[in-house]
Image (cartoon, rainbow, N blue to C red; front, side, top):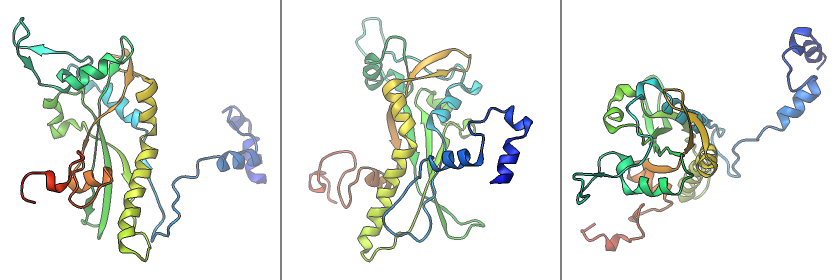
Length: 252
């Protein structure tokens, strides 16, 4: 404690204008930090969540020089003729969904459709039997021709969701607890995105112009097991509809 106080008393450190000036104040600020994820059930390893601010990820994509002239800023309707008899759907910003969302935003606001993707990935090379659960982020405004190029790196790693093994006497409960933990982590990681969706955020485009942006979630890319986990359904249920498997039509 005394060494910390002596270090903070140095003139060069005082010129930094820190928010604390003693070891006691530093400890108080450290104790006021969020406690992080907690679970009331025992696990074989600690719960560790690695994540970045999703707004920073969107900002990096939105103002990237590579995507200059390869991004749409406003929704629009495209027709084949001037009589507007036949509608053309190409990019996401030409769809009805984007048009409807844009119509409820403040005048002059920019709609940034957020795309999320997650999937468990086995890491075997030089790592043993390990599993990673990455969460990737993208924005739908980028042209599809650019997104399809792997060299564009349009999907940004936003979080590494924890993959834990719970200790419980009931085998079924282990899977339920794992899925519940994923939902809790997503709630923590995506909280800044929810705030930006409700209130908006100022971001700069590749040319340096500021935009009042709203970032609603418009798509989530996942395989069937991941989609069922996100929808909190199991068995032969549909993750996107209220239909039962007996109503699907084809033999299951």
